[in-house]
Length: 96
Image (tube, rainbow, N blue to C red):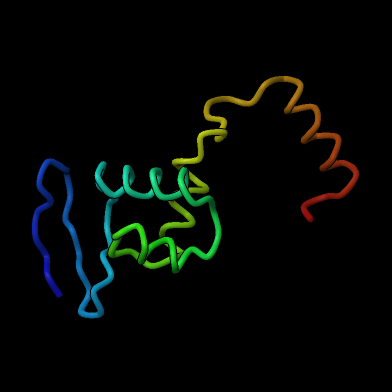
């Protein structure tokens, strides 16, 4: 296992013996993932990781895309209308 500082990024990169990289994503990794998905679309995340040149596993790539990089990802506070929808659905369905 290698513990080394990441150039231009706060934190530490961790590279496991199997070759998978863990730890914070770099701007370059984000760029590679965004560009690959833009050209080829989502899906088969283990292939995306390999073909995009990332040393991440497929699950890590999928989660990074879904939770942080998707262009249609809405950030910020929910609107009063969205809150009323949530409350209505929770009253109807509970925590399911």
